[in-house]
Amino acid sequence: MNNHPAVKVENLTKTFDGKELIKNCNMTVPKGTIYGFLGVNGAGKTTVFKMLSGLLTPTMGNVKILDMDVISQRSEVLRNIGTIIETPIFYEHLSAIENLEIHLAYMEGGDTDIDSVLTQVGLTNTGKQPVSKFSLGMRQRLAIARAIIHKPKLLILDEPINGLDPIGIREMRELFLDLVHTEEITVLISGHILSEIEHLADTIGVIVNGSVIQEVSLAKVKAEYPNGLEDFFMEIMNGRISDA
Image 1: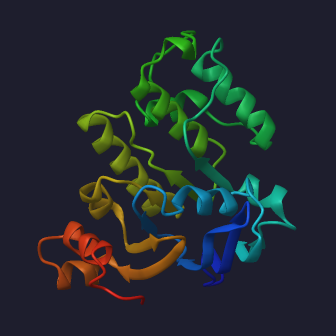
Image 2: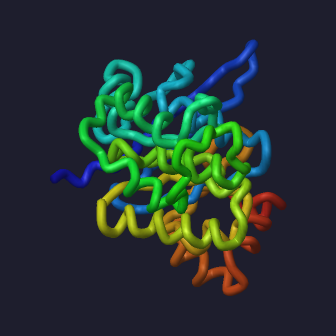
C-alpha cells in the first residue's frame, strides 16, 4: 500500500461566465483520515466537491483521487467514492431498499446486505414505505446509506448532518469515525457546525474566496486555540491569519 494522499489538488481553477470562482486551489487529504473542509457560504466548498467528484470539469489544474485522474479515469473514480453533494434526490415512489438496489446496480456494487447498511444509518424497519413519506432526517440518513453502500474508499460529504436531530448527529459521527477506523475509509466533510467538525476531523482546510488558505492539523488548532475551532475559524475570517 502506498502513502500517496487520498486527494491531491493542484492549482485547481473553475471559471463561470468569465469569473473565477475557484482560484489556484490546492488541497491534500491523507488516506485513512477525516478532513474537515470549512468556509462561509459562497466560498467554493460545493464547487470544489463537484470537481473532486467528476460532476464539474476544472477549467485548469490537476485533481488526483486515490492516485487516479478525475477526468481521464472518471468511471473508476466514481466506483471508489461515495458522495453527498447538495440536496439528495431519490426515486420518491420507491422504498429505501429499492433506491439502494438501483444505486448498487449502477455502481456495479455486487452483493451487499442492504438491511445491514440501513441499520447502520438508523433506518431499520422502514419496509416498503416510499421515500416520499420520509422526514428530512430520514432522507439524510438514506443519503448517507447510499454514499457508503458500495463500500467506497473515499467519502465526500457536503454538510451530511443537515436535518438530523442531536441523536442522529451523534449516531452519524460515530458511524463516520467507525468507517475510518475499521474500514480505512477516508472522509472529506464540510459543515457549518464547527463543534461537530471538531469532534471528527484530523485535518482542517479553510477555503476563502475560492482558494484554500489554511491546511492544519486539528491538534495544532487545539494547541494554539484552547477555546476551540470556532476561534481559529473566526481569526481567519477576520483576516488575522494569513495564507499558510
